[in-house]
Image (cartoon, rainbow, N blue to C red; front, side, top):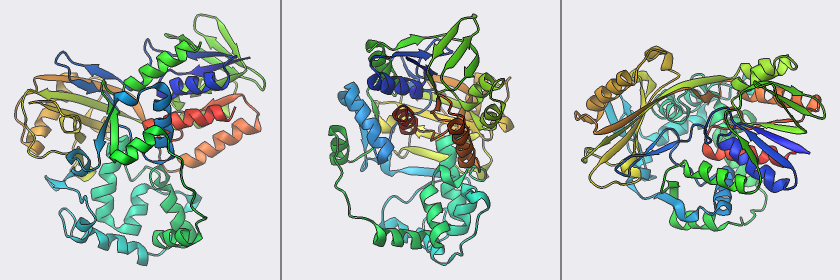
Length: 468
């Protein structure tokens, strides 16, 4: 009996971890196409000790997925590596948007909801009152865009100034195309069932069952007591995949890098992984943790319907630019700012790394560009120098930073982040039905399917293994 994990990113390493713990006497093999593990998570330490992150840099401790990750970290012995950002810190409280040619601090307290604050034309509470009086709209196929839902329930300014920039920051996506179920599934379902979000919340309050006192793990208790907003690690986010690699290797998982897979044959009782070198790997189950678009061609010959469904998933490309200045340059501390799409800039947002994790007498920023607008501003001939020039010009315009960075790193990440467009949940359901109806020994997990965040991909790996 053996199992194959396809892909050595965070979801693949997590799947290997959960699989070897559940099946300690089975052969678990992890296949990775590249020469390294960790996927898009990459932390590069500079000569001066600062850390440049290629993609995600922080993790949220809240919710089911957040609790699961904290449990994993506890099992990996990473408790003392964690560096939290507390809820009362400027990096947690001060989040900004760039709209109408200016930076605006977003409301960050209960009291601020009752004050008029630019760029909004009225206090925020009045937008949320719209939901009380807005009429329910029956949605075709039980899905709509995030922008459409927020616009009709809470108003255009909330959709333009809050939701659209937030979606850019999370997945580089266009809120007018991204499914409402990507971020607001529960409140969308409340509206569809009760006629409004507010009535749904009230109904849930009166219909809720007796509250069960949660049992917190050691790290959850610490996160609650210390009031973490988000957290990372002393040596960067890549600490997590590195720890997983070390753990699964020590428990006997076989890790094969530089593996070029030509085709996967999925039968009812077995999996045949055909490699480019002519060898074949036999297993009784495969957990695919690679992007849907990468898996699709491997299944096309034997399962054309499944391949077609997988190939219909959408992705976006990003440019990530890390910059370091050897002096303090920011006029206001905070987590950073996001750019409203209506500004028509290539820049999606900028994270103030040196505010989140302070460095003495320096400013470290990470700029994100592209996303759903990537093809408007960039192409395969775009150079790192051109990307850097775009960033520095925008930083001068928005933050009044005219200095050239003392150190920088430009990463152009092609098709790096899935886009959960309208109809995504329906596609997932059809794929799950196909796997179940054909009794195929194939499980899917990772960012393509059940969430793009660090917590999401880890939990999807755990659920895939739990279902075996």
